[in-house]
Image 1 (tube, rainbow, N blue to C red):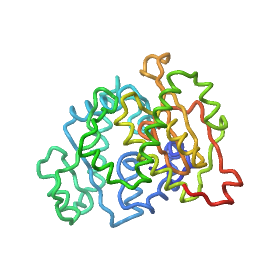
Image 2: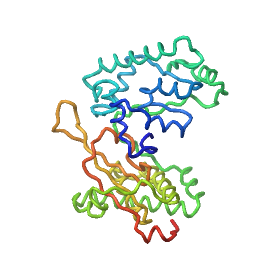
Image 3: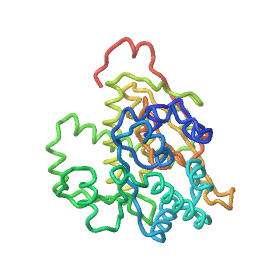
Image 4: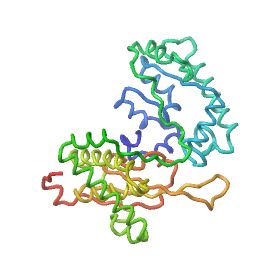
Length: 324
C-alpha cells in the first residue's frame, strides 16, 4: 500500500492539492500498480516511465455499478469523493457511471495512436489471458484467470471446516509453527471473551497509552515476526466457532505482540452507516506494527479514526536481543 512507504504523508490531502511527488516516489519500489490512487496518475506515471505499459479493464456498465454498490454499500471514502465527486455510490449511481465512462474515454484519448502502450482488457472476454499475455510478451499461465473480491452478500467472512487434509497439513508443520497456531487460537478466544464480558474502558487500559502511536521503524526481526503472527491470526479466525472479526483480530494481535515486546498501535474508527442518516454509525478496528497494517486493513480508509492506543520499545528492549 502507498501508506506503507510514505506513512507520514496524507495521500488524500496531496491528491486534493495535486501534489504528486511524494506519492510517485512509491513507484520506485514496485513493478506494477492498480486501483487507487494510481488511476488518477496514469499521465504522470507515463511521463516518469516512458517505456511502461498500461491496462484499462472494462466490463458491462450495469454489472460494474451493481458490483460497486454491493462492494462499498453505504460506506464513504475521501478517495472516492475525489474520483467520483461523492464518497458513497448509493444514491449516486448515475454520477459514478458518468465518471466511469469519462475516465475510460480520457484514457483511450490520451493513448490514441499508441497501441503498444495501452491494452483494453474486457473482463468478459473468454480469451483475456491470451490477449493480455500477448500484450505483455509473456507465456499464458496454465491456471484459470484469477477472480477475486467476489461479492459476499453476508458481509461476514464465511467460516471454514477443519478437514482431514488440513489436520494432516497442521501436523506437518514445525513445532514452533504448531505452537503459534495454538497460541493464536487461545488469544483470539480470550479476545472474544473480553469483548463480550468487559466494558471497553476496562479493555482499553491494557491496550497501551491513549492517543500515543508506536514507532514506524522497528527492528526488522520484530517486523517479520509481526507479519508471521498476522498471517496465522487470519487463518485461525476462519475456523473459530465464534465471531472473530476486526476487533477480535486486532485485540488478539495486540496480545500476541505484547507477549513478545513488539510495539503496535490499535486504531478505532467510525463511519456513517448510510449517507442520509448521520445517527447510524458503524465501527472498525485495525492494528499497525512498524510500517505494516496487520489486521483490519481492508476498508480502514472508509473510517475516521476516533481513538488509538499505542506503545513503544523500551530502552531495555532496544539494547538486548530477544528470541521471538
